[in-house]
Length: 107
Image (cartoon, rainbow, N blue to C red; front, side, top):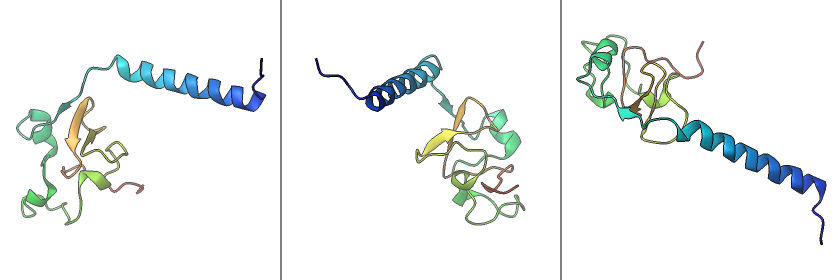
């Protein structure tokens, strides 16, 4: 029987444990639903599904180029719909915008 180098064995065990932890945390969660503009939570934060449709006159804090993609509150990733800590358990359109927008990385 050929023995595995200790480093390879530890690396394999670490990967298996990490995969198991990831599966455990996501398997029991219910699927998240997309936040609709008509919902009370969306209206409370002035959520727009498309930042290009924001009425700048009605939203003086809006600046061209702002979107959920660059916001500090959205989950990091590349998916077009992602979680947002402002509306826990829901998905927002990464191309959307709301009044609590904050530039990622700003203090």
